Length: 192
Image (cartoon, rainbow, N blue to C red; front, side, top):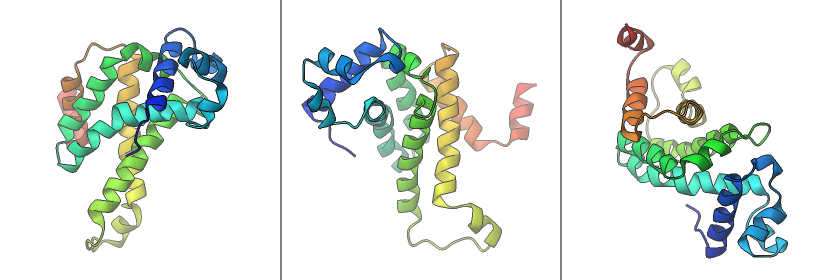
């Protein structure tokens, strides 16, 4: 977990304010530093670019609060925290989710989740015996599992943000838990 300095927080807040007024693509480092009341070199002492700044916001405000719950086996509560924290600054996250291209909100979010889950899975499986099935062992690596769950959680988050849904954080957690714990056939039957 990275610590947040007062300057990191100041730059993060400045960036969030700017995103509420203009598309991320149009925001410059100068805009961020002017909003924060600091000089440009200050920004580069803390972040490489605005995409790293966005990544820090996603990581510290949305994802890090869920990890202690995941480590305690409280997946539903962890997902509720994710959506609750998104809801706190919903307009910022809706606007940020429109960021496309190489540094899209989707890819930044997915990579952040994947990294955190990879660390968790690696820690949880260290020293444990593998399955007797070589085919399963070949595919079920920490990286593949982290990628699979990162992709699914990112997809659910993005759909919720894009659809301007009024589904509550706890209901979203229940939906995601249902998706995680049921087969596709179970879900098709639930839709009937």
